Image (tube, rainbow, N blue to C red; front, side, top):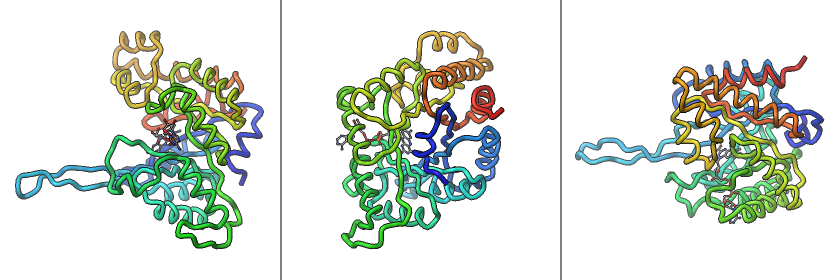
Length: 318
Ligand code: FAD
């Protein structure tokens, strides 16, 4: 099976990919597999599976105080990637993050994935805003550290200094980019310089943070190319479906929502918001597909109907 990087490099017209979350702890994979089955009708190029570290939850203790426990609300990234890979025969891309995991745990995931025949990864830092069971000082600090570990693993170099036979098939990986700048970056140049570092270290493609104004993406793509980054840049899109997202999305993802879209959603009835979000997604994806992107990446959480609709309008095979 070709790697995601090979698929992207070989594209002469835009395709699409999807990103799914592992089920909540205690839930089965039936609904997820059903959703992916619906999306598979439109032949996505690959499927990404997110990863989530443990988070604190507070429960009443007998003493009347609160007791803190750590829970991974969505475990199972590696297993879900393998299940999707086996069931649908589509390239799957498990995410790996620094935050909340020790390098040892990451190494075990790499060993598992190598056994499973999954060699596409998406390497990220993870969000810094939540506490995790693994203290920050025991985790890698940046995606660049994770890349270094994967590169070492590809050479047969384990984290305890032991050298083993290098895996026959090497891991290939992509990284995240930010059309509107990562929230912590002091400026766009600094953010793109770090992105270049990730690519120089071996990242073979970039998938972007979600955005609602394609002009941000085109400016970002121009700056990335001007900085000497020559890998495929894949735009990430998420449909708007609720009024509350007008406030949530800018604060969580640092994205700006264009005023005409804000006005349309604000003035619409709750029932009409989904259709407005869907039409905006369709227009964004169509414009990107006509402007040279190899692939449009859809964040599908809560949006399978909408993504199916857009995929059928733009990407369905004749
Ligand atoms: P980094 O590349 O480490 O960058 C973080 C910040 O530090 C940036 O400001 C950058 O400019 C700067 N920087 C980068 N490298 C260095 C360095 N070596 N030294 C100093 N500064 C540096 N989160 C999850 O928890 N799970 C997921 O599954 C997940 N999937 C995602 C998928 C996509 C497509 C995207 C765009 C994001 C995803 N995220 C996920 C969120 C991501 O973890 C956050 O955006 C996180 O804050 C940054 O991750 P990063 O890999 O870009 O970090």
